[in-house]
Image 1 (spheres, helix red, strand yellow):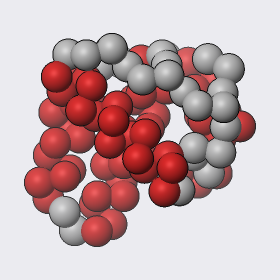
Image 2 (tube, rainbow, N blue to C red):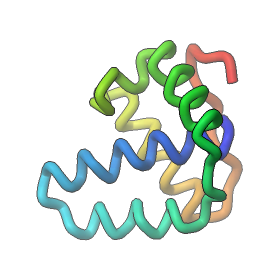
Image 3 (cartoon, rainbow, N blue to C red):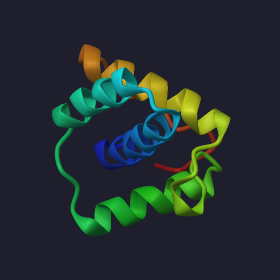
Image 4 (tube, rainbow, N blue to C red):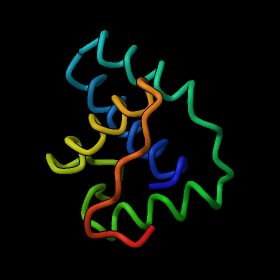
Length: 92
């Protein structure tokens, strides 16, 4: 998984936490996002297309349960300084 893909997933997870009213979840994702490099617009677009193609992210930023589970893993990895997980079913 690339840093751009991780950023897109975490941004979707932040939005999901926000919709749930989970302030501590939003803060956790914010801290993880701060550790990732910023993406160029074309990198973000390519990352979103890959994640949507794998069924991990839907159009409009909707995060299905399997995408949410991966996003949690990505957040933990970034927060702990570990390697980013592989993208299941996607060509990175």
